[in-house]
Image (tube, rainbow, N blue to C red; front, side, top):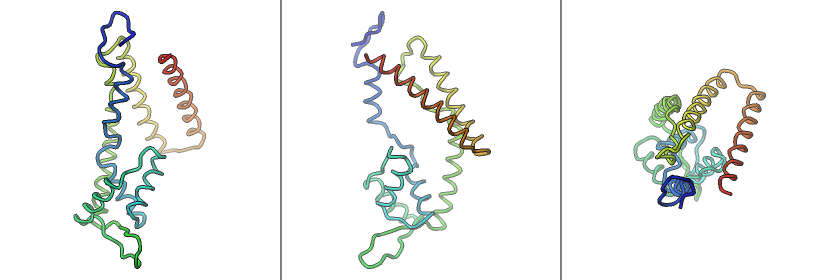
Length: 189
């Protein structure tokens, strides 16, 4: 049931539809795992479980790859000559390291990631607002502007990083998040 006046609604409210959709969508972009496994193995030999833990740390707990995604990938990388097993001590853990061929693949993927990063202006839209209620286009324009601002900020930050600027942006983001959270809470009351 929908509370919107003059609009006939069928099915659950949009926020519940989105919540359900997120469960069935891949949260991690295609190629994320392969790229990060190769990058980690470039730094030092690691086991599958060490790779899973490192990715979990790097994503601040947002995502930890499962053994069902790590071990088949390691086998594929090894079968295709991108990584090789490091001789282990007796009864030791199986660790892998990157090969020259793997370094080339990593370099190619790094270039591709940079191209994709620059195309971040085409970030996911507010799909759950369709058909768009009044004001949805303004919201989309604001979102697009925010994404462009982040891309520009990151490029500027690469040129000249400072703790003061990072702190200021962090405060802006915290304030904005709190305001949106408060509005969300108000909408749900």
